Amino acid sequence: MEKKQIYGVKSFLAFVLRHKPFFYKIKLDSDGFANIDFVLKALNTTKKSDVTKEQLIEIARKYSGGIFKVDINSNKIKAKDGHSVVFNMRVPDGLSETSEVPKQLYCLVSQDDVSNLMSSGGITFANKQTLLSSNPPNPIEGMSILTINSNKAKSDSVKFFLNKSKDMYFTRHLSSKYISVHV
View 1 (tube, helix red, strand yellow):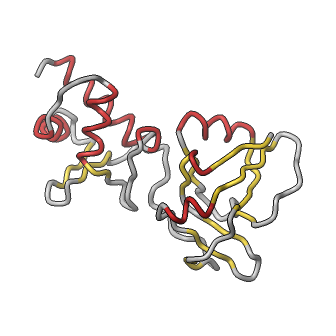
View 2 (tube, one colour):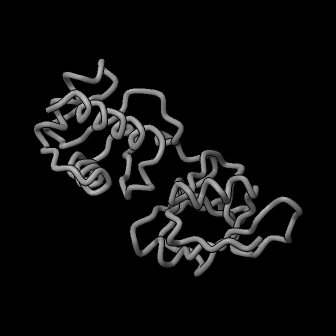
View 3 (tube, rainbow, N blue to C red):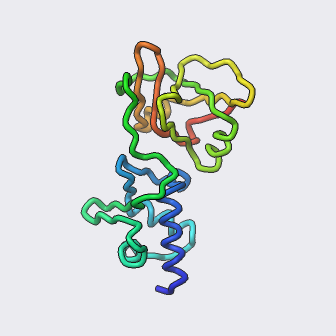
């Protein structure tokens, strides 16, 4: 492979695995690993290239200066550090996983977060302050209301957690396909 192509693959891996996995429909597990086959598909589709799995692994191991970790047995790859996405979150205290969710859930987010949501293909709820309600909130200036199709998300295996005492829900990440925005 040419130096330029190696650099392009390294740059793509770093960008996707650190910052925008959801934009490329790549899921990170709780340790930050992504499925190599999904990463390779995203790379070849986006860059219109024909990089093989073996080449991708070689670049990640040999030409990256140690910034990636590859686990061939599990068919996974991750960036070791430098992430702007949150992937290793514990469930906030007081919440337990629930199999039943209302048809729709709501939350308020800043209008800046809405811009990030649209550009990244989803939203990550990094802390317990972003709880989802079964009742629409009152509008607040500078904030947008997100309506979440929680039934669809749940049917697609999104995990929801419930705080029974407050009737509030939490999830780690939602793809934009489950969200509509009301400004």
